[in-house]
Length: 456
Image (tube, rainbow, N blue to C red; front, side, top):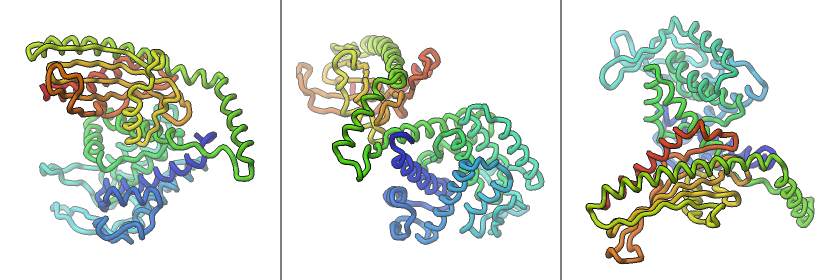
């Protein structure tokens, strides 16, 4: 991306930072903000004239101040990564001070459990307990103030020893550990997400944006980590990072010429460069991802044939059944099938489905009397240029007919069956993902069959 779309990638990163800045405060209930205004601020920057009083539950001027503080904290993180600045208590205090610059008070509980408003000490560890009361009346205990200093020293020391471990797992561990310590009177969630972004950026990954719609899943994942199971939080972080990467690969490429060049020369030069790239070993290596797709397609075909056979036996009591399973794609001359559905669903996730490269699919169809189910698993490239990244998505179409002999359906319903795509690359060993792909396919097919069964 830096080679072919440097300016576009830079703008994408800025939008990602602004989105992170908006969502991190919403997660903490600092403010509410409608989706339309959010998108305007992400696109154009944090300007007060973009916000009206009805768009948020706090004064627009205060909202912009808080958003700019949160944006400034992420820029500090990026600057530290660029300058290889070590993670220290001083840096963490600096982040906290920036994030709470326009927050003067917070709530605390006295020895009798009464809540009271106290001044917020910025850039300094807490001096009073901040243990919240759960809905069931139980107290969730964080680290006592007297032990915060030593616990933070241990956290920073441990992080320094994890340089060769999986980045997403380390980020999830550090994020949870910080929230367990809860070193500040308030602002801990915002600081922990900023530190998580620092860990990811140092590994060449993208800032982590936890959307407001994921708040429940995010909190549940932290609860699971409290009980010793870090996997849900790590999976959430991995999914968000993967989606951000796929969106980045889908941004438009920069123009291949400058205003000083003649248009003809620029086009010829760009064409020459493009043709040269096509003949490099690098592109051949990236296209090895097609081999992985073909193997997954074969696995899908086998699974769908088995499922359709079982379904036929079950629904035979309803009436006569007609079914078939078909593979297709670039090796069958019908790679253009389902292009509209794939492109449409990709756009909804801000991704680019690249049909200039090979496309493969498996189609399963079953009709019982007036109701027909078509279930498709698509394997397509992601990114405006060849990236070596493909994803599998699953969708279904339900068709109803006026009579059992009708050839044209009178009612159709299209549904995406896979909540998240299944992503793989040219470096993926198919043997290592067979089990995970089987679970993904099973879940997607179950969604389609449930909807179909409701129609019968």
